[in-house]
Length: 169
Image (cartoon, rainbow, N blue to C red):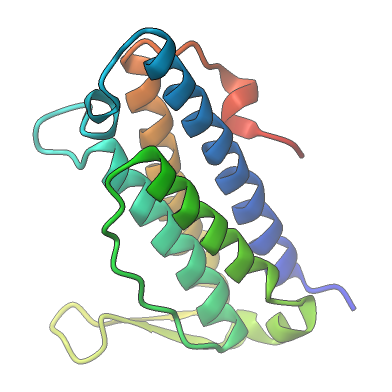
């Protein structure tokens, strides 16, 4: 059985995280070939008040696991976000991809009407339908952080382009 909510989330998140993993591999290889300290990339940011590359990847992973978990009615796993190397970020992406693969389309049936509560019990609490959460909050947030990670690396001289960003589809 096909589910729009599954089709619009898990395969898209998987595609983009896989592409981000490939871009990170290119960055690690480039750093090694050019004798660049990997921390120069991992700590790079587009502007001083923005998160660095490593945090952008962590947040993209957080959104991916959160989107799939919430829409499937499952608990969102809590991971420490302590990755400080390319290997650590690759392990995080692999763990996130494994988590995404654990969900089948049947778990997303009726999820468009599911009530998603963000920041429960706080003054910033927000209630969204599953479809509004996916299409107007979750995916835009996820893409923002994936794009920012890509942009940080491109800005710092990594020769990547749209094909690298998009990955395999």
